[in-house]
Image 1 (cartoon, rainbow over the protein chains, first blue to last red):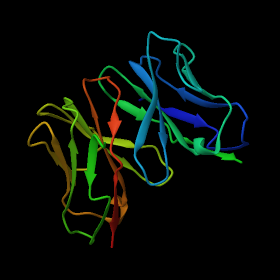
Image 2 (tube, each protein chain N blue to C red):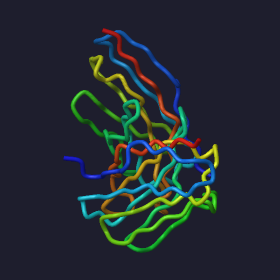
Image 3 (cartoon, rainbow over the protein chains, first blue to last red):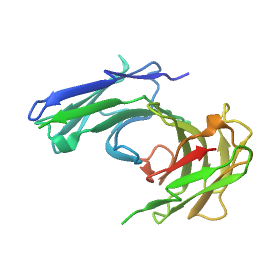
Image 4 (cartoon, chains in turn red, brown):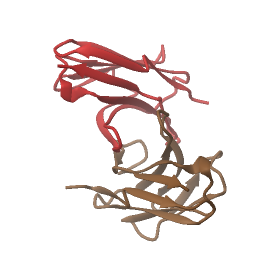
Length: 111
Length: 112
């Protein structure tokens, strides 16, 4: 059974700092990996999706990497802003469409 | 414009009283999903539809059922809600299996 772990559970940084969020998964036979953002009391917003054949994806200040063999992904946020404060979740999908989420990292960016 | 719409945003029901949550989409996606998310936990997939084909997760309680009368709508029925069913329920859609999923804002269910 696929297990997805995100460390740390919570992170607080000053504005302007670059940061890395970590995601690890136990079964490397994945179809894709997706990073989401969740604001309090809201649904999930997709940030980046990496197919199993890809190594990384970039969108603006965000860069996500994938190392299937080691079962790891990172989300890099450059020049963090208070508006980046949210919970970030990673989710892996197998070809059976079985999507498993991590519990998320709660990020606080202080002005 | 919202593409995955969940109603209501907040739902309160009594212990044991059936409740239905609704989800609609304007994306014309083939796949619709229901997730349960408890406080500070990962969303947990309950079931999904590919078109009219229903796929239930093995550990989804029998108390939870779903209907998809057409492409645009999908419903989550909880037959006899217990206190442990209080959670945020998230609906999502995707064009195909493995495509990016688009989420609604969720319905927060409280049980009295």
